[in-house]
Amino acid sequence: EPLSIANWRWQPFLDHACGALQPLELEPYPVAPEFLLQTSQTGSKSKPVQVTTATWACKTNKLRQVRAACVEAGAAASVLNFVVNPSTSYDLPFFGADLVTLPAGHLLALDLQPALKTDAEHTKAVWERLMPIFERWQQRLPGGGPIPEEAKPYFSPGFLWTRIPLGSEGDALIEEAVKPAFRDYLELYLQLVHEAEEVSPERSAELLAGQKRYTSYRAEKDPARGMLTRFHGAEWTEAYIHGVLFDLDKKWM
Ligand code: DBV
Image 1 (tube, rainbow, N blue to C red):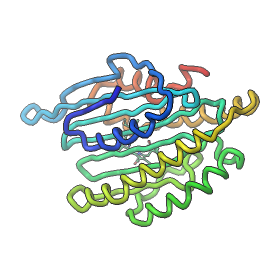
Image 2: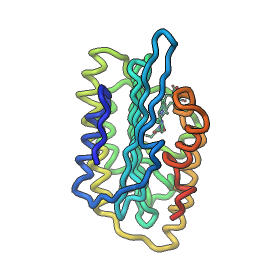
Image 3: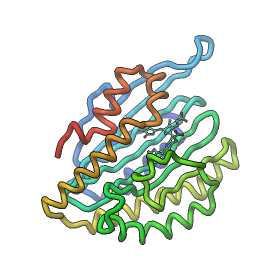
């Protein structure tokens, strides 16, 4: 079912992704009600801000979990974090998008992230097709600045990463470069999914080990932890991060 959040900046991106997934045979991916939709208040007593955090999720035969974490908090924050977790029976990367609007500006990340970065069988064909897309769009966008050294094993060389100021020029850049980049990354990803064939149990075990490293890293270092904790409390946030957003350790498969 489509998810719609009033006045949410990233709604067109989620709508596009849901539309692009429609040709696949989508099955429900269960999410507990307190994570499907959570509302809270933030800001000061005199200037309260309503926060909505919502989750959209599904799965397919080849994709263990497709999920979007969506935050709408007016001027305080607007986020779409969209991650596709492939089944370990297929030699596929993750799709990751982090579209973040904060009072200080937009912070935007797109990537097809490897589970096994140093394994050419896992990366070569993906990177060859990703790099031209990366180059086309990154050159139109400002750089995002340094990323933590420890994060590097989890990025591809096609990691698109930009920081854009708020305002109409930034809005235009998002429309003219970030939106088509998002479409191109997702289109390539879904093409790779379409082409993927089942791997051996031995290969699947390697992919599982790589996915687990990636997922624990993302859960441990989630840059949204502080924000979500402020909005919804620590208990809810830890359960959301480990039980929904990066749940591979729980839903063993
Ligand atoms: N990031 C998440 C989830 C979010 C989320 C689940 C539900 O993984 C939002 C929300 N990312 C989010 C927020 C910030 C960032 C930052 C709110 C800002 C934190 C802050 O400034 O307070 C990409 N996202 C970042 C940063 C990076 C990424 C490198 C900056 C980190 C920093 O400065 O410390 N997230 C990272 C990444 C992917 C991703 C590579 C995949 C493409 O999703």
